[in-house]
Length: 370
Ligand SMILES: NC(=O)c1ccc[n+]([C@@H]2O[C@H](COP(=O)([O-])OP(=O)(O)OC[C@H]3O[C@@H](n4cnc5c(N)ncnc54)[C@H](OP(=O)(O)O)[C@@H]3O)[C@@H](O)[C@H]2O)c1
Image 1 (cartoon, rainbow, N blue to C red):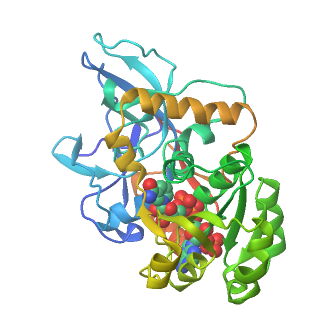
Image 2: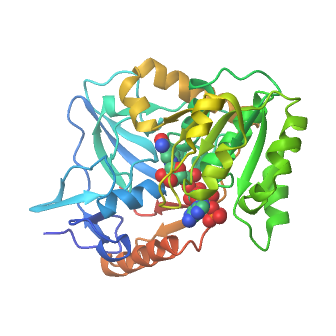
């Protein structure tokens, strides 16, 4: 039975018992305060946790990574939403070293269930986030998925020299904005493709202010002079050697035609929900290579030290002012709301996200952690 929400500060999580449409299946569940942590574990209080596109797919049951059932309240096993988030350590088990109360940590275990006010987790399932000037809770909460994806895609496929170009679609996505900033910090140039919109000039200015070199829309890809002249001029005849695909569908086929010889096209998302189709001629005559990237696979295949180094690199970029917070909106889950009301509010937020009404990263904040 669920612990009843009341005016006292209690724990709460956003949960589901069956996969399906997040605007239907999610609910809020209040649960008891955590007991003292067992020896090799820590108790956490989540400070902020994002709602990423992949979280929606997990709840829909169409994502390869699956959460496990957790018994949050007696005889009440649920899936807790959320893969990413920033937490503060509130209590440390007797057999834990290297972590203390007050440390900021991020999750190393996939599908950890971050949409909760407090959790008890194994100390190996978290990574301490180094504190740095300018590092905010929003940075921390969004540090393990999008910036690492951008960083690794810029490093792992093509050895790019200063002033070389990268082309990407979905350039205004959180990953796309990280790509722009990390590329700019390395002296790389970016050709950024976005959907046309009434406020295109504002978006163009925003992406250029982050360090983007050029911003075009998918409609511009019909202009034949782009491949025949413009890109040749921009790249001094060298061509673009890395393309990053967040969208797929026919506009991505057109984007692939912008790539030069021996280029890589790396796919990491499929926001159009369309397949990716590429002309055979690009493989034969331009020696195109295509690949996929999944940050979860990277985490599985890399050591704890690699993960710590990656976090340190990204935090250093933040400290140097080279990696800004994504634009965000906070969805607060108030202790004054009953589980029913909090559940209605989160379902409404998920419905608005699915209608594309945000354009900003939505972050969950519980004001009732204990
Ligand atoms: N492989 C990995 O390891 C990895 C890691 C992180 C993220 N991802 C994936 O990367 C994608 C972006 O994630 P995010 O957190 O950066 O998302 P986000 O900030 O919510 O951005 C979503 C992007 O998708 C675009 N978009 C939405 N529907 C579209 C459509 N029908 N056609 C074309 N563009 C569309 C949006 O453009 P508008 O502004 O025009 O709507 C926006 O640029 C997601 O698919 C996510 O799952 C993958």
